[in-house]
Length: 242
Image (cartoon, rainbow, N blue to C red; front, side, top):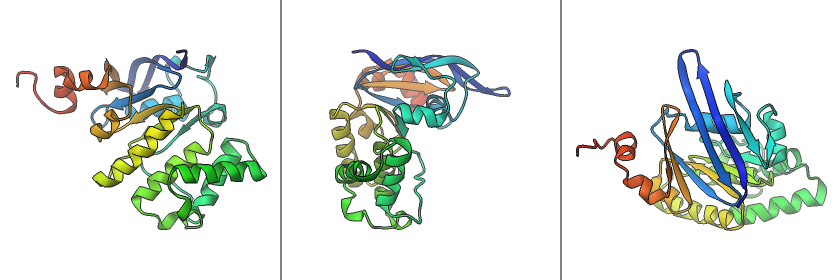
């Protein structure tokens, strides 16, 4: 399969602190890639570099064969990148449907009936149809997470990036959300998912990358990666000697 995303030697520093250290990876079209690592490892920085909210000090980003390193976040979004945020950020005074419409019109560039149809289809997919007229500020955590997912999908992404979307949910809520993400993956959308709820992540992704101190330290089949002594020491705090 062709690559939809290529990161080549991405480096980002803030003074003496390096938050991305020569990061390189490819994402195949339709692949689901998981990203794990300790808090502060540079995972969200990686997302910010991909989406254009941070500019790298070195390296390049190619999306669908085009160099997007110098493109704005808005242009990358319109090109087909969309993300959720670790802390949901809806327009609290607007309804769920209105939040979705903003993404459909501003990111996907749709209008009128086409925008409305997309939003209704996505709300059905994310199990928020019965909350369409509810103010976003009154949603439960699960439904705020679902709204983050809805807004990203209403941008009609070719690449969907999820930042700890399962964090803070109960086990049953997590199972429900994972079911939706599996359906999205099955539809052919490429996914990069940062997550600390590892069992949820491994149930979806095809490949796993581990980041520590801004460096990629492992990349491969998820279960094999989680059995690695180096990964267990860095991510799980299990000493190799143990």
